[in-house]
Image 1 (tube, rainbow, N blue to C red):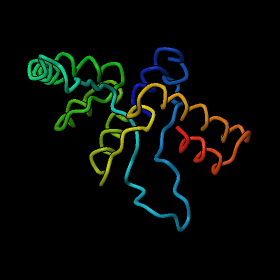
Image 2: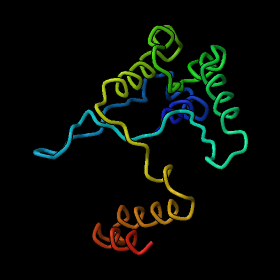
Image 3: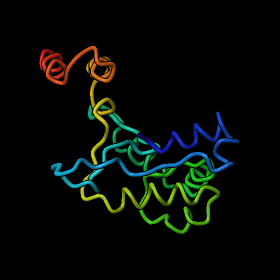
Image 4: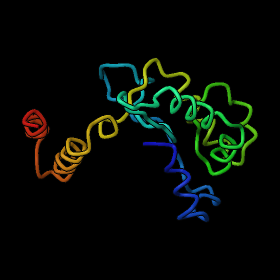
Length: 155
């Protein structure tokens, strides 16, 4: 999940959050499972991309870099409960209005030996929709993991 969900909860269910009813944790581990439980998958609160074919690629990258590190932009994200994808902002998070949550997320990412972006965000829109549709079928017990793999292989 992305850190925007906390901000979404603040906007749609502020009393639920203020009453301390919203919790968060790491993803559960599987006994004898493979992999490092500190490795995580998710999405930063904000990300931008520039096509390699852009005629103004360098200028676009420069603009984005300056924008996402602009102190007022970083502060605004922290103030609404989002965690900017920027190193070295521990003190800002600790002194922000949602410090428990934002420092938890930041430390989770900081300590991760690997970080992978969610599949649906890394794929083209048509393939991402197919992935989400087929995955939903598995969770609804309308399909099996094997059929999910077969459907995605056919893509």
